[in-house]
Image (cartoon, rainbow, N blue to C red):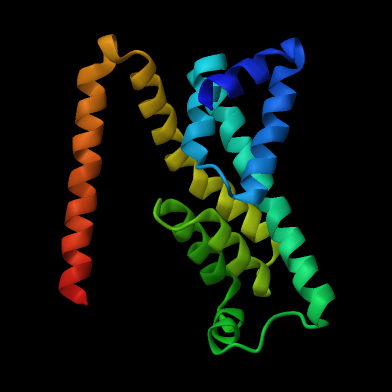
Length: 185
């Protein structure tokens, strides 16, 4: 699949970057392929900075479009601004800054599916501008990490040690987080 995607994007020649951006936006709207796979392909084709920037931009724009489509679809089908669910009422009462930081925090946590964040934001009265900015800022660290891992996998002979350190650090962070959450539950 990855090789097919590389060949398909390469077939566009100079238009490959635009095709990649549109493809990334579409995948982000649909939420069918993890962003790390797309980021890895983009890093392989265009290098860390251009490929990472393209992946980040596609995810942010795709999330924004998904938010708008979900919100418009919900409101058109129900005639309501948001559901009558208790937790939605609670979120809608939060100050604007707290709503912003909740989306930012959710975007920083890699185990929360992007589609769930898109849906949650769309069902509330969260302003689109706040949602998009929180998404853009929150996706920066995860995209940077995806770029680093992708780059190091591509250049495993030169970067294998760094890749190993990053993976060990991620496993340790996950392990500590898991121990902490199990202790609270």
